[in-house]
Amino acid sequence: MSKLEAILSQEVEAEIRAILEGARKEAEGLLAEARAKAEALVSAREKAVKAAFQAALKRAESAGELLLSTARAQARGEVLDRVRAQVEEALSALPQDPRWPEILRKLAEEALSALPEPEALLAHPEDLPHLEPLARARGLELRPDPALRLGVRAVGRGGKTQVENSVLSRLARAWDALSAKVAQVLWG
Image 1 (cartoon, rainbow, N blue to C red):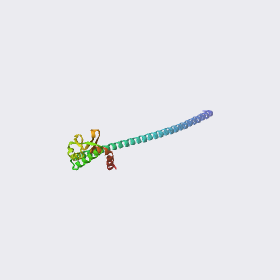
Image 2: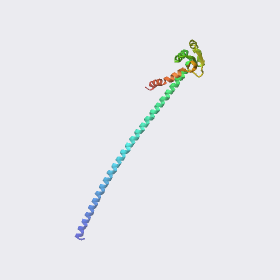
Image 3: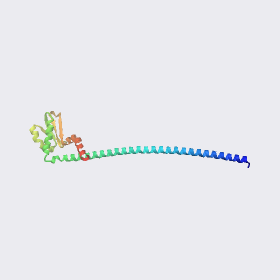
Image 4: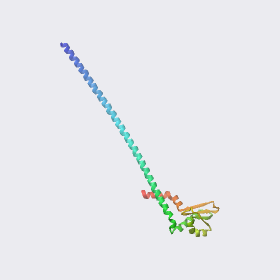
């Protein structure tokens, strides 16, 4: 090989090495750029997934708290319903209490006082004997009403006005305040 060929060959090899080195550096630059973009994309996706997870977790916690609150309210309502049923059951035993005639008389007097001109007093047939002295003293007709339990009904002149006063109707009117007190005692 001649010197010229050797020089040309060396120059060509040097040029090839320079091209290869440039290509290698360009490939490394492209690879580094691709890695950086991939890492940025992965990081962005990771942040998005974490944010979505936190939002889903917060929604699940809120739903759980709502479900728990609803269950508590339902359970409290059921307890208060049972308390009311027990109170009504206890009240249904009042006619066997020795104080029942006096309680019945007071209920009758309250009902009668609400009417300007009472003419009759109605009560359960079993309760009529307890009300006879009051009816006689006031000049009232005493009538049986088998459907009327734990109280009385006063009827005004001509039968146009009536006032019912029973233990259960009083409980119904007072239940909201009573149940609030029961709830306070039970749950603070």
